[in-house]
Length: 350
Image (cartoon, rainbow, N blue to C red; front, side, top):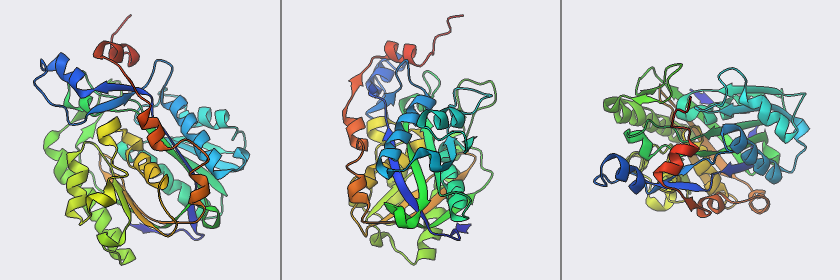
């Protein structure tokens, strides 16, 4: 389904947040395979003892506001997509809205759709702004490092995410010229109520899951916009590991120079609901006016969102107003597996 709002919509502010703590894949291998396994990513970001989806969302939102230079009281929706909301019954969105000064005249809600919960909130924000119901809407994708101890997911389950502030196209750093959604009922990854850790059906994770949604969503968008892969300056897709996004972008005809800026999974792991949009923030940090960007998310269950962006002159000023995504990636404090277990509360103490 291709989407184009009645009124032009763009990204007026953006911001990322990634915790400083890093768990090397070699540490996981040391504990669970006597060092004989090579992890699929070099290391992953891990939240500190005082960090969760709420605190990280607040930091990313404040960066987005710094870039947008707007009054937070003008935001009419604060929506947080995540697989790791700290409360089962109490929205993350209200806490974030209060912390950034957007309350009380705003909507607040939490979104779910596995790893595309952040772009799901973006789609809703586009509709809200594009219909004229709001001037600004804030969409956040943020997650903590989840993964059952010893499971393959533990190597890649990282923490962090991004906030995307949507508003009128004439105020934006990037105009969203078109979006698309592509969904089916395909089971490849899930977590039942009351379960601590997600499970995955590996035989469905690549095909028909990831590739069965990312590829057609991208192809539909490019066909609609009459674009070829070579017409884009940057591309970012969901990054559950290194192999999947590289293969998908190669299948679509993209070259490494087009994806290298937004491919962050090897440095921070899979940030789940924030994966594709945290890669987008890294692109916006270096993008130049007039450039074209293709963004493709993926969420297990399953579905993809696609966005065709055109960068505007406003991006150059916005880039200087808040920390860059790579600033967060470069500041790192390594931890061992025991520290990671303590930080993530993986030991039952009562």
